Amino acid sequence: MSTLFTLGEFRIDRVVEMSGPLFPASSFLPGLPEDALAREAHWLIPKHFDEPTGYLIQSDHSWVLRTGKHTILIDSCVGNHKTLPSYEIFAGLETPYLQRLASIGLSPDDIDFVMCTHLHPDHVGWNTRLENGKWVPTFRRARYLIGRHAFDFAQRAIASGENEAERPVFDESLLPVVEAGLVQYVDDGFEIDHGVVVHNADGHTVGHMLVHAKSSGASGIFCGDVVHHPLQLRYPHLNSMFCADPEKAANTRRAVLEDCAEHNSVLMPVHFAGSSRGHVCRDNDAYTWDEHPD
Image (cartoon, rainbow, N blue to C red; front, side, top):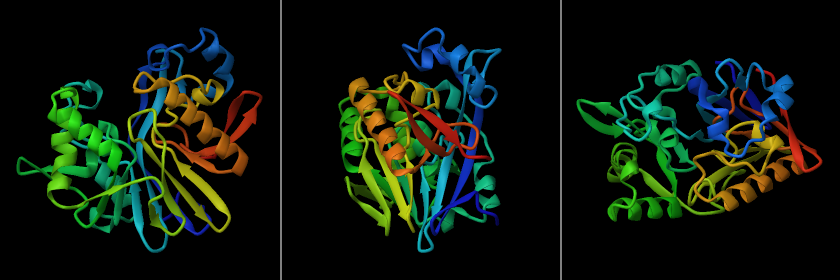
Protein backbone atom coordinates (compact mmCIF):
# COMPACT_ATOMS: atom_id res chain seq x y z
CA MET A 1 0.00 0.00 0.00
CA SER A 2 1.25 3.51 -0.82
CA THR A 3 1.85 6.00 1.95
CA LEU A 4 0.39 9.50 1.82
CA PHE A 5 3.72 11.01 2.87
CA THR A 6 6.71 10.41 5.11
CA LEU A 7 8.05 12.43 8.03
CA GLY A 8 11.61 11.31 8.49
CA GLU A 9 11.31 7.55 9.05
CA PHE A 10 7.62 7.79 9.95
CA ARG A 11 4.79 6.89 7.54
CA ILE A 12 1.68 9.06 7.70
CA ASP A 13 -1.74 8.44 6.16
CA ARG A 14 -5.13 10.07 6.41
CA VAL A 15 -8.51 8.33 6.70
CA VAL A 16 -11.31 10.69 5.66
CA GLU A 17 -14.77 10.17 7.10
CA MET A 18 -16.55 13.14 5.53
CA SER A 19 -15.72 16.40 3.76
CA GLY A 20 -17.48 19.29 2.04
CA PRO A 21 -19.24 22.58 2.87
CA LEU A 22 -20.18 21.99 6.50
CA PHE A 23 -20.71 25.34 8.29
CA PRO A 24 -21.45 28.96 7.30
CA ALA A 25 -18.24 30.97 7.50
CA SER A 26 -19.83 33.88 9.38
CA SER A 27 -21.21 31.72 12.18
CA PHE A 28 -18.36 29.22 12.40
CA LEU A 29 -15.75 31.97 12.83
CA PRO A 30 -17.51 34.73 14.82
CA GLY A 31 -15.88 38.10 14.24
CA LEU A 32 -14.55 37.24 10.78
CA PRO A 33 -14.10 40.61 8.97
CA GLU A 34 -16.75 41.22 6.33
CA ASP A 35 -14.17 41.53 3.55
CA ALA A 36 -12.06 38.55 4.65
CA LEU A 37 -13.53 36.00 2.27
CA ALA A 38 -13.20 38.31 -0.73
CA ARG A 39 -9.66 39.27 0.27
CA GLU A 40 -8.55 35.65 0.64
CA ALA A 41 -10.66 34.19 -2.18
CA HIS A 42 -7.65 33.71 -4.49
CA TRP A 43 -6.37 30.86 -2.34
CA LEU A 44 -9.51 29.77 -0.47
CA ILE A 45 -11.52 28.82 -3.56
CA PRO A 46 -12.20 26.05 -4.46
CA LYS A 47 -10.59 23.88 -1.77
CA HIS A 48 -11.50 25.74 1.40
CA PHE A 49 -14.57 27.89 0.68
CA ASP A 50 -17.77 27.22 -1.24
CA GLU A 51 -18.72 30.63 -2.63
CA PRO A 52 -22.31 29.82 -3.73
CA THR A 53 -23.38 28.73 -0.24
CA GLY A 54 -21.02 30.84 1.87
CA TYR A 55 -19.96 27.68 3.69
CA LEU A 56 -16.44 26.74 4.72
CA ILE A 57 -15.22 23.53 3.15
CA GLN A 58 -13.90 21.26 5.87
CA SER A 59 -12.91 17.66 6.42
CA ASP A 60 -13.25 15.23 9.27
CA HIS A 61 -10.48 12.68 9.21
CA SER A 62 -8.09 10.61 11.28
CA TRP A 63 -4.33 10.65 10.94
CA VAL A 64 -2.48 7.34 11.03
CA LEU A 65 1.15 7.44 12.11
CA ARG A 66 3.33 4.36 11.62
CA THR A 67 6.63 4.65 13.45
CA GLY A 68 8.01 1.25 12.49
CA LYS A 69 7.29 -0.01 15.98
CA HIS A 70 3.71 1.15 16.53
CA THR A 71 0.67 2.17 14.51
CA ILE A 72 -1.05 5.19 16.05
CA LEU A 73 -4.47 6.47 15.03
CA ILE A 74 -4.97 10.12 15.99
CA ASP A 75 -8.61 11.23 16.45
CA SER A 76 -11.28 8.73 15.50
CA CYS A 77 -13.89 10.98 13.80
CA VAL A 78 -17.65 10.69 14.38
CA GLY A 79 -18.46 7.02 13.87
CA ASN A 80 -21.56 5.33 12.47
CA HIS A 81 -25.05 5.22 14.02
CA LYS A 82 -24.25 7.68 16.82
CA THR A 83 -27.24 9.30 18.53
CA LEU A 84 -25.89 12.85 19.06
CA PRO A 85 -29.12 14.88 19.36
CA SER A 86 -27.07 18.05 19.96
CA TYR A 87 -24.99 17.52 16.81
CA GLU A 88 -27.51 16.99 14.01
CA ILE A 89 -24.84 17.16 11.30
CA PHE A 90 -23.09 14.13 12.82
CA ALA A 91 -26.06 12.04 13.97
CA GLY A 92 -26.77 8.69 12.38
CA LEU A 93 -23.89 8.68 9.91
CA GLU A 94 -23.16 5.63 7.79
CA THR A 95 -19.76 6.01 6.16
CA PRO A 96 -17.22 3.47 4.83
CA TYR A 97 -14.58 4.62 7.33
CA LEU A 98 -13.33 1.11 8.12
CA GLN A 99 -13.11 0.27 4.42
CA ARG A 100 -11.02 3.39 3.94
CA LEU A 101 -8.80 2.23 6.80
CA ALA A 102 -8.47 -1.09 4.97
CA SER A 103 -7.46 0.78 1.80
CA ILE A 104 -4.24 1.85 3.53
CA GLY A 105 -3.57 -1.75 4.55
CA LEU A 106 -4.90 -1.71 8.10
CA SER A 107 -7.62 -3.50 10.00
CA PRO A 108 -8.89 -2.24 13.38
CA ASP A 109 -6.75 -4.89 15.10
CA ASP A 110 -3.60 -3.40 13.55
CA ILE A 111 -3.97 -0.20 15.60
CA ASP A 112 -1.74 -0.11 18.70
CA PHE A 113 -2.80 3.29 20.07
CA VAL A 114 -5.82 5.55 19.56
CA MET A 115 -4.95 9.09 20.61
CA CYS A 116 -7.94 11.33 21.38
CA THR A 117 -6.78 14.95 21.28
CA HIS A 118 -10.05 15.89 23.01
CA LEU A 119 -13.49 14.49 23.64
CA HIS A 120 -15.76 16.20 21.14
CA PRO A 121 -17.96 13.74 19.20
CA ASP A 122 -16.04 14.12 15.92
CA HIS A 123 -12.80 13.01 17.59
CA VAL A 124 -13.88 9.94 19.57
CA GLY A 125 -16.70 8.37 17.56
CA TRP A 126 -14.96 5.41 15.98
CA ASN A 127 -13.62 4.49 19.41
CA THR A 128 -16.65 2.21 19.34
CA ARG A 129 -19.01 0.58 16.87
CA LEU A 130 -22.49 -0.86 17.24
CA GLU A 131 -22.65 -4.67 17.31
CA ASN A 132 -25.91 -6.48 18.09
CA GLY A 133 -27.30 -3.36 19.70
CA LYS A 134 -24.28 -2.81 21.96
CA TRP A 135 -21.43 -0.31 21.71
CA VAL A 136 -18.12 -2.19 21.68
CA PRO A 137 -14.51 -1.04 21.17
CA THR A 138 -13.60 -0.79 17.49
CA PHE A 139 -9.87 -1.14 18.06
CA ARG A 140 -9.82 -4.11 20.40
CA ARG A 141 -6.04 -4.45 20.69
CA ALA A 142 -5.32 -0.74 21.09
CA ARG A 143 -4.62 1.40 24.10
CA TYR A 144 -6.91 4.43 23.99
CA LEU A 145 -4.92 7.48 25.09
CA ILE A 146 -7.10 10.15 26.69
CA GLY A 147 -5.99 13.28 28.47
CA ARG A 148 -6.42 12.81 32.20
CA HIS A 149 -7.61 16.37 32.78
CA ALA A 150 -10.04 16.24 29.83
CA PHE A 151 -11.62 13.01 31.03
CA ASP A 152 -11.89 14.09 34.65
CA PHE A 153 -13.55 17.35 33.61
CA ALA A 154 -15.99 15.58 31.27
CA GLN A 155 -16.84 12.89 33.80
CA ARG A 156 -17.59 15.45 36.52
CA ALA A 157 -19.77 17.49 34.16
CA ILE A 158 -21.77 14.41 33.15
CA ALA A 159 -22.12 13.12 36.71
CA SER A 160 -23.38 16.50 37.96
CA GLY A 161 -25.82 16.93 35.09
CA GLU A 162 -24.06 20.11 33.96
CA ASN A 163 -23.45 18.85 30.42
CA GLU A 164 -26.35 16.66 29.35
CA ALA A 165 -25.70 17.50 25.70
CA GLU A 166 -22.48 15.45 25.85
CA ARG A 167 -23.97 12.44 27.64
CA PRO A 168 -24.55 10.45 24.42
CA VAL A 169 -20.91 11.01 23.43
CA PHE A 170 -19.75 9.84 26.84
CA ASP A 171 -22.05 6.82 26.94
CA GLU A 172 -21.55 5.66 23.35
CA SER A 173 -17.94 6.52 22.57
CA LEU A 174 -16.06 6.71 25.88
CA LEU A 175 -17.60 4.50 28.56
CA PRO A 176 -17.36 1.28 26.50
CA VAL A 177 -13.58 1.61 26.11
CA VAL A 178 -13.19 2.63 29.76
CA GLU A 179 -15.22 -0.37 30.92
CA ALA A 180 -13.21 -2.66 28.63
CA GLY A 181 -10.01 -1.57 30.43
CA LEU A 182 -8.47 -0.16 27.25
CA VAL A 183 -7.96 3.45 28.35
CA GLN A 184 -4.66 4.94 29.44
CA TYR A 185 -4.93 8.47 30.85
CA VAL A 186 -2.05 10.68 29.75
CA ASP A 187 -0.53 13.99 30.80
CA ASP A 188 1.67 16.61 29.19
CA GLY A 189 4.97 15.08 28.05
CA PHE A 190 3.69 11.53 27.64
CA GLU A 191 5.77 9.70 25.00
CA ILE A 192 3.71 7.34 22.87
CA ASP A 193 6.79 6.11 21.02
CA HIS A 194 10.29 7.41 20.52
CA GLY A 195 9.90 10.89 19.04
CA VAL A 196 6.10 10.97 19.43
CA VAL A 197 5.12 13.12 22.41
CA VAL A 198 1.79 14.44 23.71
CA HIS A 199 1.57 18.08 24.84
CA ASN A 200 -1.07 20.25 26.47
CA ALA A 201 -2.92 22.54 24.05
CA ASP A 202 -5.68 23.93 26.24
CA GLY A 203 -8.40 26.31 25.10
CA HIS A 204 -10.61 24.75 22.46
CA THR A 205 -11.66 22.39 25.23
CA VAL A 206 -10.46 21.82 28.75
CA GLY A 207 -7.53 19.42 28.56
CA HIS A 208 -7.13 19.53 24.76
CA MET A 209 -3.84 17.94 23.66
CA LEU A 210 -1.71 17.71 20.54
CA VAL A 211 0.87 15.22 19.29
CA HIS A 212 4.36 16.32 18.24
CA ALA A 213 6.25 13.85 16.06
CA LYS A 214 9.97 14.09 15.29
CA SER A 215 12.02 11.73 13.14
CA SER A 216 15.41 12.09 11.44
CA GLY A 217 15.36 15.89 11.67
CA ALA A 218 11.76 16.24 10.43
CA SER A 219 9.00 17.60 12.65
CA GLY A 220 5.21 17.52 12.50
CA ILE A 221 2.33 18.54 14.75
CA PHE A 222 -1.03 16.77 14.85
CA CYS A 223 -2.92 19.69 16.31
CA GLY A 224 -6.48 18.41 16.74
CA ASP A 225 -8.77 21.45 16.89
CA VAL A 226 -6.18 24.05 17.82
CA VAL A 227 -6.80 25.29 14.27
CA HIS A 228 -10.05 24.46 12.45
CA HIS A 229 -9.67 26.21 9.10
CA PRO A 230 -6.85 27.82 7.09
CA LEU A 231 -8.54 31.24 7.47
CA GLN A 232 -7.37 31.17 11.08
CA LEU A 233 -3.78 31.47 9.89
CA ARG A 234 -4.67 34.83 8.37
CA TYR A 235 -6.70 35.76 11.47
CA PRO A 236 -5.07 33.79 14.30
CA HIS A 237 -7.07 35.62 16.97
CA LEU A 238 -10.34 34.18 15.64
CA ASN A 239 -11.82 31.18 17.44
CA SER A 240 -14.40 28.76 16.16
CA MET A 241 -17.91 28.75 17.54
CA PHE A 242 -16.98 25.59 19.45
CA CYS A 243 -14.02 26.95 21.44
CA ALA A 244 -14.69 26.81 25.18
CA ASP A 245 -12.12 29.35 26.40
CA PRO A 246 -11.60 32.01 23.72
CA GLU A 247 -8.51 33.62 25.25
CA LYS A 248 -6.71 30.34 25.90
CA ALA A 249 -7.71 28.96 22.51
CA ALA A 250 -6.30 32.00 20.69
CA ASN A 251 -3.07 31.98 22.73
CA THR A 252 -2.57 28.25 22.11
CA ARG A 253 -3.24 28.67 18.39
CA ARG A 254 -0.73 31.48 18.10
CA ALA A 255 1.89 29.46 19.99
CA VAL A 256 1.43 26.39 17.79
CA LEU A 257 1.52 28.39 14.56
CA GLU A 258 4.62 30.23 15.72
CA ASP A 259 6.28 26.93 16.67
CA CYS A 260 5.51 25.49 13.23
CA ALA A 261 6.85 28.57 11.46
CA GLU A 262 10.03 28.69 13.54
CA HIS A 263 10.87 24.98 13.31
CA ASN A 264 9.54 24.21 9.83
CA SER A 265 7.12 21.66 11.27
CA VAL A 266 4.39 20.14 9.15
CA LEU A 267 0.99 21.15 10.54
CA MET A 268 -1.64 18.41 10.38
CA PRO A 269 -5.07 19.60 11.54
CA VAL A 270 -8.13 17.36 11.63
CA HIS A 271 -10.55 19.63 9.75
CA PHE A 272 -8.56 21.22 6.91
CA ALA A 273 -9.78 20.18 3.48
CA GLY A 274 -7.46 19.86 0.50
CA SER A 275 -4.41 17.81 1.38
CA SER A 276 -4.98 18.64 5.10
CA ARG A 277 -1.29 19.27 5.71
CA GLY A 278 1.30 21.93 5.03
CA HIS A 279 3.84 24.39 6.35
CA VAL A 280 3.15 27.63 8.19
CA CYS A 281 5.01 30.80 7.19
CA ARG A 282 5.05 34.11 9.06
CA ASP A 283 3.44 37.13 7.39
CA ASN A 284 3.80 40.11 9.75
CA ASP A 285 1.29 39.43 12.56
CA ALA A 286 -0.38 36.59 10.68
CA TYR A 287 0.65 33.48 8.77
CA THR A 288 0.28 31.93 5.35
CA TRP A 289 -0.65 28.33 4.55
CA ASP A 290 1.84 26.54 2.30
CA GLU A 291 -0.34 23.55 1.56
CA HIS A 292 1.30 20.31 0.49
CA PRO A 293 0.05 18.86 -2.79
CA ASP A 294 -2.55 16.09 -2.67
